[in-house]
Amino acid sequence: MGGGVSPTGPQRPHVLVIGGGIGGLSAALALARKGLRVRLYERSSEFGEVGAGLQIAPNCTRILDAYGLLDEAVALGVLPEHMIMKDALDATELTRLDLSHLERRYGFPYIVIHRSDLHGIFLGACTRAGVELVTDAHCVAYENVPGGARVTFADGRTDEAEAVIAADGLRSVARELLVRDEPVNSAYVAYRGAVPFDRVRANDVHEKDVVVYIGPRCHFVQYPLRGGEMFNQVAVFASPKALAGQEDWGTPDELDDAFEGTCSPIQKGLPLMWRDRWWRMFDRDPITHWVNGRIALLGDAAHPPLQYMAQGAVMAIEDGWVLAEHVGAQLAGPSAKLSGSGDPSGIDWDKALAAYEAVRPEHCRRVVLTARKWGDLWHLDGLRRLQRNALFRARDTYDYAFVDWIYGPTALLPEEEPEMYPTVALESVSVEV
Image (tube, rainbow, N blue to C red; front, side, top):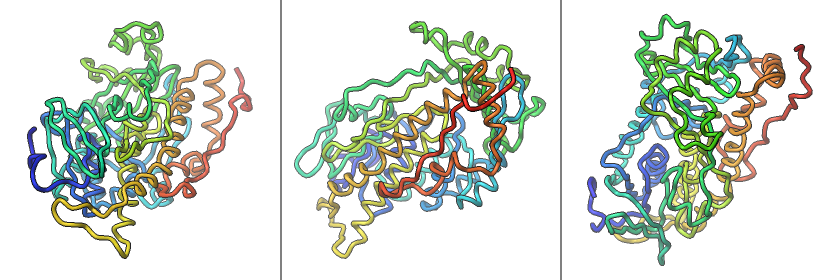
């Protein structure tokens, strides 16, 4: 295994984190900040992220600020002025959020940032915090052992700690300890493309906004990145091949067909999409139990969502913060202590993991299921599309009823979880056809 101290060395970690994505790194940082020795294992030979832009809402920038990382994230990203939703067929505006006003409401900004930049921020922070980073480590099994948990790697090596955090993604091996389920195929696929801003300047784009064009069975997202030097685009559509049960689905020919008849800004943006790779969109049905003994799921291993709420990375970062806060509450107590090399941390892990499991699954269940509903709403056609458009246009720009439950402070206890947003039946909206 490459990187860091040998797993058989004298400094036995208090916690193992499996997975070096944004969720794993942020959890490792959160726990290291509480004084724990953390060893993180990454399957690949080096740390990195594939993709383009991420949207980070105030419920997450609040945590970045607590970690002392918000200024760095803002410097590498963009503070957009508005989030604007438009109809993908005629480009008319449906509704918007004033993101400066939103920052004043929630106390923290809404930022957009390149995925690799945010990953790099957490990687650097983990290094500074003393997290032991190990690469080339493919974890294939998890088990509980007396006083902790053990992981086994593909090369036969093992490691143990008082607790193991499984941030091993959509196809998590650790999840199999809790449920035998499979990812749910939405039949939607995403194409991405981030290009220098000069390549889109003449394409009728918004230079300082997040814009989402929603259309029948498709949507298209645009926003600036890296201080406005780059421009990010995401094209999402329902794949007829997937719906027909074909193996080869989401191909570039389907991309072009899906957006036929959409507005000019989309047509100008489509040729700039990466066409050599695409992301098939899966989630999983929510589960209420994330903890098996001293092994806990985190991030996409626990709650992989569809992307419509832009909360996937955010939820993973929240997971690590919540767990670390419950650990920290014990360390701050009158009997708290961190023992020397090889000694227990003094953490009651059963208590900490129970507190984590008491609050996070319900919140993430809400997000996963709401993302599905929002995806359905975005992609309506016919009369229901017109009713949706009328409903969106009637919304006041400064009405936060639909986002207060998600953008406010992250709950540490079940009773802190806010009420959900009100529901409105599309059938109640009258439109002229």
